[in-house]
Length: 191
Figure 1: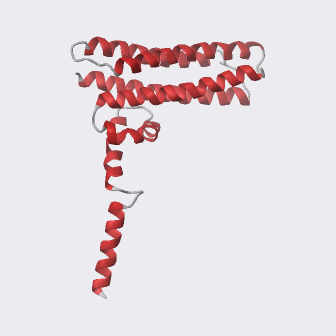
Figure 2: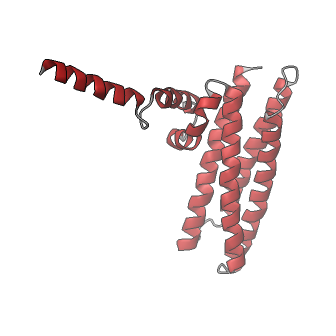
Figure 3: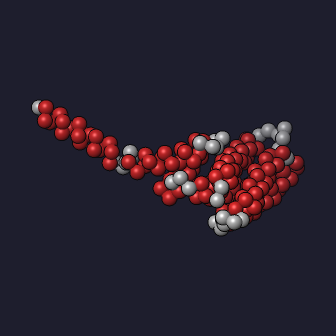
């Protein structure tokens, strides 16, 4: 009977250590992403959106910054598609219609800035590191400003579509804020 209990406990322990949902590798990877995201304002979003990069990024701040900007580009593109659909649907009139058009322009600028930042992060050089990081920080900060500016045109407006739009834009700004924190962490780490 005691032998059976020991075998059962051993089996349960091995299952826990090697099981697909709680493997040793995923726990270590989870530690990496939590460590990387510790500098961000929206940590849960950061951990959720970047956890798949853990095994490749590990403790490399350059890879985490690239991952943060890449994920932000994806979120920005999704919201841009939503804004295009909203414009094409032509359901918003007057001031709100112009605000949607302004948002599209702001999101276009944000995407340009994020793409420039990602391009620079892919070619970081030790001798040019500080200058490159200043540029990257400026571009990601500008993208965040573009996203915030998008919502200015809807100030004081109400309605289901405006609330949905505001939620989507706000979520993108959370992604961008996280990316900026990861870029800032890389800049502080140095070449």
